[in-house]
Length: 379
Length: 177
Image 1 (cartoon, chains in turn cyan, yellow):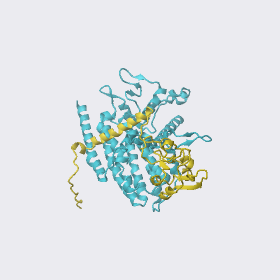
Image 2: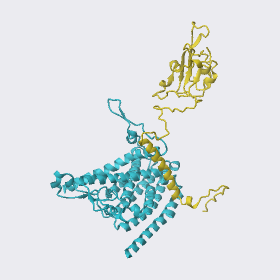
Image 3: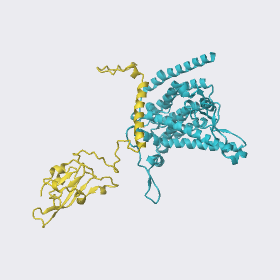
Image 4: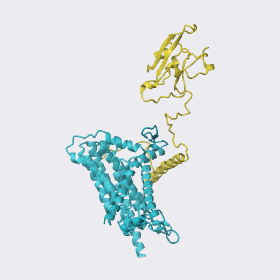
């Protein structure tokens, strides 16, 4: 019993650490990638001086994230005269917490056998194994959508309680946009659920470790390429990033629903947005890119050609953890590429794009998937 | 309510179905930015510079135009003294009023007894218009194409005095003996 607690606490610590690290690192990645894309150098002036020496550590501008955080914490915490102080105070947290909670059901590694990893502790663990995932829920995918929906409430709450017309407009835009794209998001995933036959994310990853036609990994992106594109688009829209950043449109609405927020409250909104990039990356990895397993590899080891070539457990665990992080980072990098490449929609175009373009495509994708599966079952 | 009728222009944009589908053009745009990213990234990784930026205080660009108006210099005579006769015309014409000259008398040089004891330029206010160069009757002040070493932590360190301005001395180019 106490062993379960220890392992779960370690996993939670790892997950929270990874998310917060991603949140800070992505601010740097976004700056640097945008700079390199546009023939610039990027922020690289913040430094940490080693005490009592003149050695200044610059590290390619990595300390700009720290400088940002420090600035957020030291700034004046402005409070507007609002009649809904509670809602105003709750807004950032209602946005931030669900984003962290979503990660609870995402598997970031295969099976962990602490007894084999640390032989001296083998007796204490008694051969117990744990999936590397905080909460092993059968309804994993549904939980993700449930928590994802709470984020809308945070944005609406922040906009409504700020007592500012720009905030209110931004909140209304955020609400209608996120609800529209949530529909598309769920519909694209439905096709995947038909193929995998489960909503348990661990099972989904295990299914993707197999192969189709003998050599192509059975990743969602190969089984459902349309759904992959639609899912990523809808997820970026859900995260309110640039081609879809109408709720925060700086040129029209100052900062949208967080106009009236300053200091660390505003920092929480920004942090939530950056963590959500990582969450979208983790979700896309889990659903479409084969999760924590490298291609042609399953929980037993390399599975291409003849029989499986097993990996020792002490090598398997870091391989899977590392593969997951690399895949997430690639998807995050792609999202940043999209953010710095595409111009913004007009607001009517945004909703028309959701309901007249993506929604029918998602439905068609679902219908074709269902028909093909039905035919394959009959054959 | 009927929407406001959109005016028709003689050059209405026409899009093919390919552009109207939007997805292909998005893919093309992503390909372009991604290509530039990988190209620049490859340059950085192989130790070259993948950006057009000049790292200003550490680097200065090598390709200033010959006509660029940068740092001022005082032209020297053959004996190393400034060609300036401290007539104050440049200080008078300067729109930003950045030039300060203190004239002095040199009895040892009867040909040109008046010379500047102090010649200082405040670069925190200089607008690099070049009027001082045009106003000078003795061709004593010119502008180099290189910029002065400006970055400093406060304005008091952005002054250049006579010693710094007298560093340029191609003797054969001096206009008057």
